[in-house]
Amino acid sequence: MSFPTKGLSAINHKDTHYRFIYRNRGGKNELWVEMSASAGGQHLVADVPRVVNREMVPLAIDYARTNGWDPAKKAEPFRCRYLKGSFVQIEE
Image 1 (cartoon, helix red, strand yellow):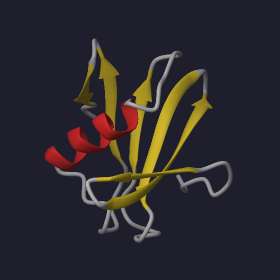
Image 2: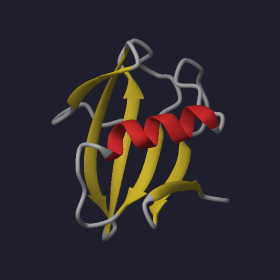
Image 3: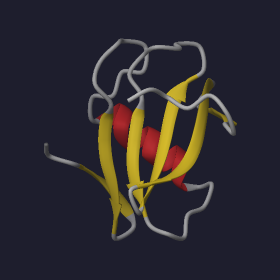
Image 4: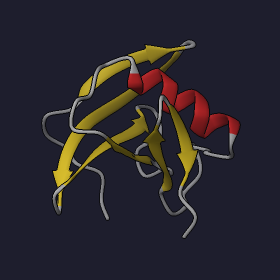
């Protein structure tokens, strides 16, 4: 699963630059995030509701970083879901 390259938006969160995009894949909405400086590093994929807002991006980043997401290292995507006002990790 490769990170998209077109249609990305940028955000500076806690002095780190990230790129993100909202996508609809297979009938579900996803937020994809990667750190701008680490192309090829681990990216974040969050399942989000149909109605999304830009404030979900820093919430997803904070949740993922607190729970082990390391965008500077190559690894499988960190997956989480927005549920009842906060993010929770998806157990594979």
